[in-house]
Length: 426
Image (tube, rainbow, N blue to C red; front, side, top):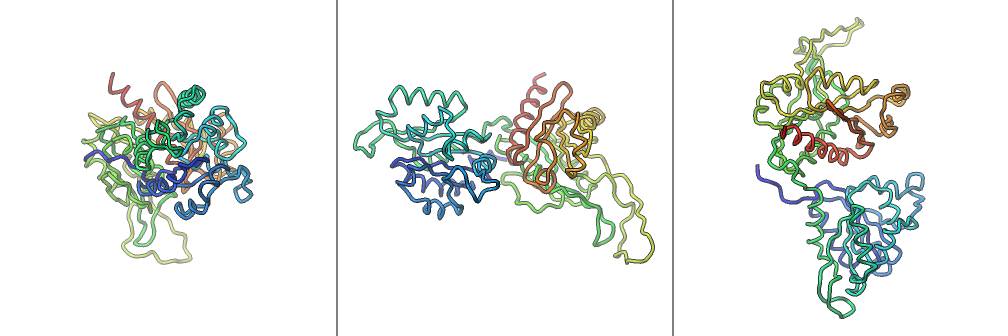
């Protein structure tokens, strides 16, 4: 399968627009980012609205434009925190000399600076200013400070400026900014590596209309597939019944039952370098599914269940197994159960998370060693866009704190790539 071209498909990009004449290019930039597959929202500084109206960006992005630090319409009035959590990338274009200085000083008295301080997202600026302002020692020192603090700097370009002078300081063109942003999500850490991922639930039929299933949405597995594709991996995605858009640039195999998933995995596993088992595979199935609908009666109904094949264990037990990452969804004693599964199934890594209700979690979190951000709430785990993971391997562990599953997947893939390359190097 050929490598994909740079893409921002399904990325959440927060575009910061500052007060400079180059702000007119930001309108076209919104469109170009959307054309690349991104969802775009806009934050404008007080100076930016003097050059271009918020209504322009609202019409182009399809979202309200944000400009106030304390938003009465946001949850608890904390709009900057909501935006910080939402973004995969914060791109400030144009970034003026003043806005750059404010970022360096750690100011948080306007929305854009506060969002940057509060976010774990990738951060990038596209400077635009007079060429003498760009060349000044103060600006160059500020740019170096931002680079040291993990900001990416796109441009500037050289050419004719609004002041009539010529020199370095022009904002890059929208297409150039889109390409630069896309490159931030492609490190090539898994270029050419074959990875199989299972995702979603399995449905075990009781009769033609009923089944045994679970609440898995498949979001985590799909997010991991997209994160691995970003890093150049060749993906085979085997999914149970889910209602999610199919990721681009992967081979997808759809199944329904655990036995079907097992057969699909084993039919293609010899080609794989890495296996990631995120699917919530049913441990048991009815011994015999009825051919006709079971009619309701006053009598109790008993089902005889038989174990399903253990896909993860069977993969790890192969003569030449792929590097295997398992998942463990637990309601209590998360580390104990995860490490036991890691050992008993002979896995290289395991990612564990808590599932259940707040009441279930209150006691299990005590003494678990899990960061408080991994505590359960109604917006984590199954059927949620958010999750947190505790990852274990034989001689180490890592905590991945609560965030959107797309962001979490990128962190996990980065950790997996590091462990995989260390393992294959020995």
